[in-house]
Image 1 (cartoon, rainbow, N blue to C red):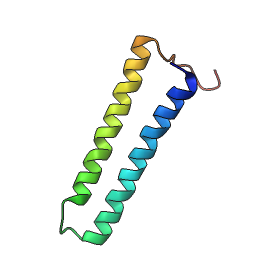
Image 2 (cartoon, one colour):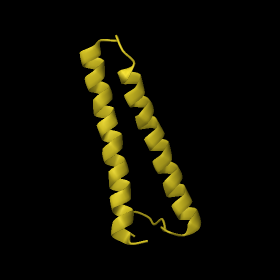
Image 3 (cartoon, rainbow, N blue to C red):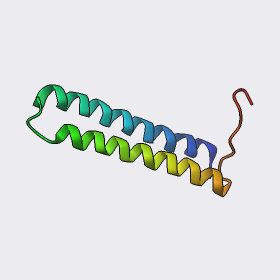
Image 4 (cartoon, rainbow, N blue to C red):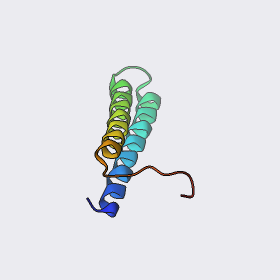
Length: 72
């Protein structure tokens, strides 16, 4: 897999995570607890975060990416 594709995949996950976090904040302010949209947005954020962590762990295990130290 191409290095730039890996980077784009991780960045796409991070953008979706931030989008759902912002949506949760917006729904919390607008709905004032009258709907489940805040809970749904934050649930999606958690699911995306867990999926990203599992994807990175799988990538390290399969040898697709190699971890390195800071500045290494």
